Image (tube, rainbow, N blue to C red; front, top):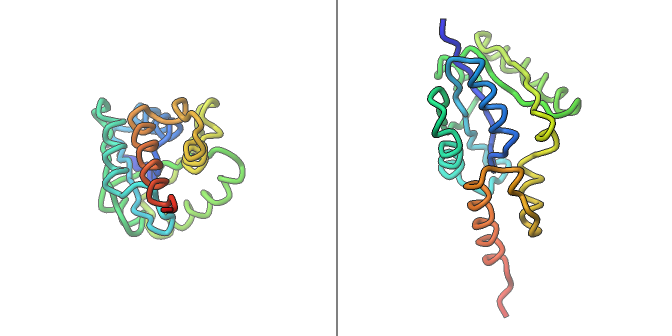
Length: 169
């Protein structure tokens, strides 16, 4: 039996922590779907299409990794993808409580989808998309936190946002 895993997230932006989990999962499972969530409630910096393209570029050399954008219930998406495993990254104990609730809800909605919690490598434990955006927004160097193509896209987008927000006069 081939095991198909899904690694969902907003990936706004994709970080080295995310990439680390995907690459490690790709060694464990026959196929891994990076499921980029629409998630408009988080007000992402990048569009869904842009986040999908950034993730595809990051995993272009991984033959058993695919990237798909989705909206709606993750449990339903998992069923549509015929996935057996849902991968969730857990950086700290605080993450675990929330992830445990999500795992229980997803199992209730799709009993065929088992959640597996993975921890990032030590060098990526503190990295979050929110922190990366904040550091970059204030001119900090994020090159050790995100893939190079993501850094370039992030700096360009934040420059766009700053130019739009700049008062005229």
